[in-house]
Image (cartoon, helix red, strand yellow):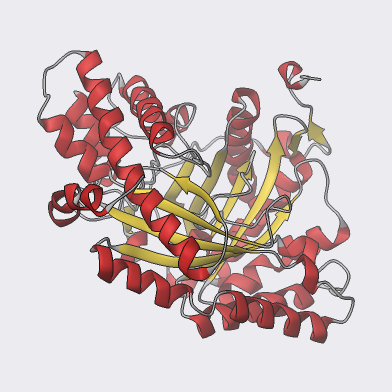
Length: 454
């Protein structure tokens, strides 16, 4: 049973250690909106979202005020639009019109973001899904709140290299379409391997087809809380270190469970999952990289970084699953660059490279995240980076992702400012050698042998 005394125990975490509920995300199924009439489909989508989510922001603010728990974002995720628009959309422009409808609906109910402008193409692309993918640059340059994701591979199906090749081009086109805002559109676009159906975090959130008609998912975050707890056991054994992380993750997750339960009751919508990811912000003291340094590294990226991150990720999960019966989403440690001041400092110090970040993604929750690269990086090079990350996810039976930003007009040594939770970042160098002949091969990389579980 969760009660107000547990909330009071976290007051210091909230006031001094940057504990927050990063998001309440309302997942909404749009399957009952489907029609072959585009105008009618747009009306159905707008009505479904604005009706189902009309009280989301109000309820979130009420919970914040009543319990004193900051809820940073209120968000919506919807059924992948590549499925919803298949009957009505005859061109990429038609899909972009659906993005405009999503943006209007999200603005009407006052949420921070809406996710689900998505396609699931891990084995192959339908004509509709390919049209949606080709519409992404237009959709993200003409909307404010829409986030897009594409699932390119899975452990059971392998990697769709045709889609990987296409996404390298789409990321470059999105960067060009939003170059006046430092290619910000790419910050709202992520590609996945093994994408989860219940992820509340953007830009990758979508409402999976196995989900109920509507569901509440909550994402909590507490890097600052974990870092503060570890300062008290500096120099202690690994056993003490692990126990401290687990106990702290338990407390953080209980806060998320409370908020999720309250939101569910007040909205009359079923509770789905708590995602207990350690999601950093640009605020000083709210950094996953700082946790790694507290564990014993001079900088993130130093030898031992991958081992320290593996320990952190595992103990966060172990503590979280004891606090809630329904832990899901991504759940673990995020390692974005622009959103984590400690990661930015490590890049500037020369200890953290894209190659080291790729190694770290083998043991954390996501992948190459919010990394700014030179704007003249070839589309084939971006596809190669995506393919590497998809392979890590496929072989290790885990979720991996890529959210990289080729900043048009900028190069290595320059900085880019995105603002808000998206932070700022130095432009990182990429390997200069070509992989074009590799990514231009057609077809897909087969599933690994250990995928055959039947």
